[in-house]
Structures are given as structure tokens and as C-alpha cells.
Image (cartoon, rainbow, N blue to C red; front, side, top):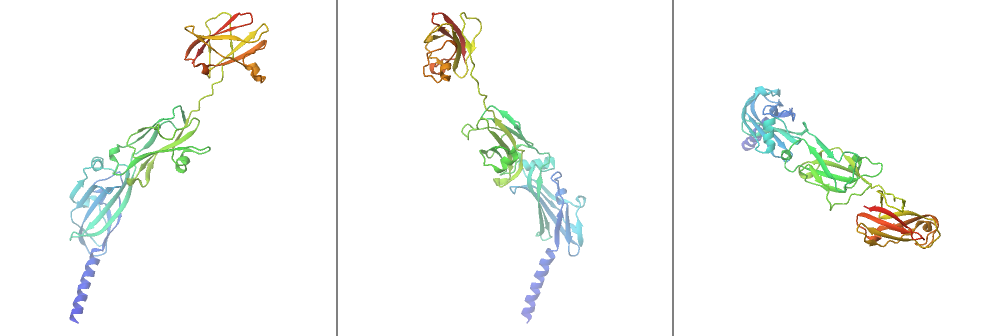
Length: 371
């Protein structure tokens, strides 16, 4: 009987001790990312369900990778029964430590958090050095932060299929938490779709992960961008491990210019005597008009380069083409139109001379330029 009473008393003491330690709880902690100081991270509300006791606090701020940025330990202080709202002036500090990392030095110098995700924790320490209660809250900091696209401008039309994609953000890359990164996403823009919807819904045409520079040339070996088509793009900031987007730019769009169709330059008129004028060819074709005053059969013509080296053309009679005739050399009296395919002659860029002879062997000449 005595043994049973003894065991019961021991159990009661243990239970009472655990209840004693569990009676001090943290119900609230007020902290803004704009004000990170030893005093501010210790501003908490405690509830003490027992009589007046002595406790201490340990408060800390961690980045998204779990790395400690600042840690504060207070001296022992007394709290009364009930609600205790701790004020900075009522606390003394046994130790204050900032992490030697870039982020830790930033917090120490600026008294604020860089942009990103963080965690603030407060621990109630009893006189035995044990943690009675802990309270943690997530913090999201975007103070003075910006993340913007620069070039190509939104809704711009550009000529290159490998554009230089340029963006910017407010803080140095070395202020990122370990594991945080940026990525660039580019998608094809469908008809009737805005850029934001395209980036959200369409399959990426190109993604660049772990982006730690503000310029990116669209790679030559990536999926080719096409003339006349539009594309949407965005830069996103990813949390540690790339598990989620914590910030992003607006989505912008640009279009690859579709070359204008160059119309054939028709028609050059041959002259008996050259003057300062000349005819410029387009699409590697020479179109000329020759009005024959006399009846005749085949046209006789020759092309020379500037060194008077002869090139042998084969003109097509467009009048007969329209009449669906097969001969390319027979011409009719009157208004006659001819075409010479210069691509088949492999002419280099420069000036050339076309000479045409009528039935009386009279010569007509045209100076023309091949681009």
C-alpha cells in the first residue's frame, strides 16, 4: 500500500511539473519586414496561467532555406499572471548575433529584410533552460522590390529571331536565399490570347532556369521563332528548391516581323542611247518592254557586265505566257513584255547592260542594277 502511494505521489509531481512548464504560451508576435532589430523580434504577447515567474526569450529570423539571419537572447525577466505584452524598453539582451552571410549583413546594416520568404520564431525559456513554448510565423518581404521586363518592349515588333531578352530587379543576386533563383519563360501567343494568359496556360517554347544575369540572348539552337508570329515571356522568382513562384514580372509580348513581299519592278523601257538613269531589278528578275515597229520573229538580245563580258539571257515573252503559248522567243508587233530570270544567270551584285536588236538590227540599250 505504501509503495502504491509513493508511486502515485511521484506521478503527481511529474504531472504538476509538466503543467507548470506548459502554462506560459506565446499568443502573438508583431513583426514587420521593414523593422528588424533585436527589440522588434522580441515584441510578443505571453499568457501566464500561473503565478508570477521568471523566464527568458530567444527570438530568431530564418530565410527560406532555414538559415539563421539574426538571433537574440534576452536576460531573465519576470512576468505576472495573465496577459503580458512585452515592450522593447522592458527587455535586456544577453546576446545578439547576426549571420555572417550576405543576407545577415544586410539585415544588420539596413534593419530590414531583403525581398523573399522568411520565418520569425520566438521561444520561451524557463529557468531550467528548457523551452516552455515556441511561436513561429511566416514573413513575406517585398519592400522596395521590383521585378520588371525591359526589352523587347511590350507589343513591339522586332526583326531578329534571336532577340536579346532584358529584365531587371531591385536587389543584387547575392541577396537571394540559398536555393532561390530566377527563370525566364517564353511561350507562343495564340490568336485572341493575352500575354498573361499565354504564359499561364501554354506549354513553354523556351525556359531558362537558374538565371543570374539580366540579359539573355535567345539561343540559336532553341526552337526557332517564326516570322509573323507573336510570343509572350515572363521572368519569375522561385523559392528555394524551385517549388513555387514567389514573385514575377508582368507578362509581355512581341512579334517577329514578317518581311514585306517585294513586288516585281515592271517594266523598264529600252532606249537608243544610254543616259544617267538605270533600272533596279527585284526578286532576281529583269522585266523590260520592247515595242517593235516592224514585223518580226525572234528577239535578239545580250547582257554585258561592266567589263563588257557577255552574259547569255533567255527572255520569256510575258504576252505569250498570258496567251498560254509555249514559245519564249517569238514576239508580236506592238506592246511586248519580256522577263529574264537573272537567278539562272548567277549574276553578282552590280551594274549590267542589256542590248536588244530589232528586225533592222537597230540596237536598244538598258542599264540595270542587280542588288
